[in-house]
Image (cartoon, rainbow, N blue to C red):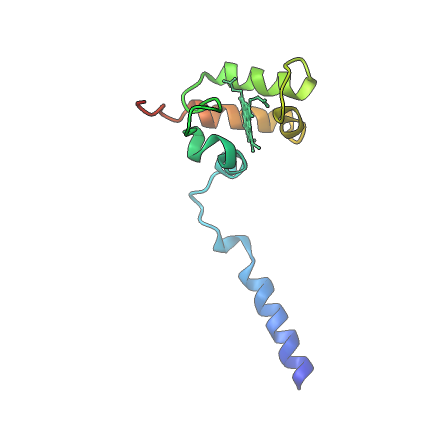
Length: 106
Ligand code: HEC
């Protein structure tokens, strides 16, 4: 009986982890961009003036920066390692997402 109860709990946990529980308003690009928020701020609104602001940069410039970090063409401290983790399609999604954000008034 105890085992049955444990099994039932396990099944309920799996059910709770189904994607249907995730809000459909979170796009794949937003999910990718969440990784960048720790350093570049929410939606690329970088705070503090030490790191580049991503919000509102052109899509071409963002994609080029990420590709150049990935290939090593552009020198960086951390972005080379981060950019290597993304496919070209994901880089395009990220660039489009940050380009679509309104830059904040400074
Ligand atoms: C651990 C902190 C950190 C994280 C996380 C991070 N970045 Fe960066 N980013 C930096 C730093 C630092 C720079 C400056 C270049 C360097 O030294 O690496 C930078 C520079 C950039 C630039 C160049 C901008 C410009 O105007 O020159 C782009 C584009 C960029 N990051 C995109 C991203 C994206 C997209 C993500 C998420 C997938 C991300 N970053 C995650 C720290 C981070």
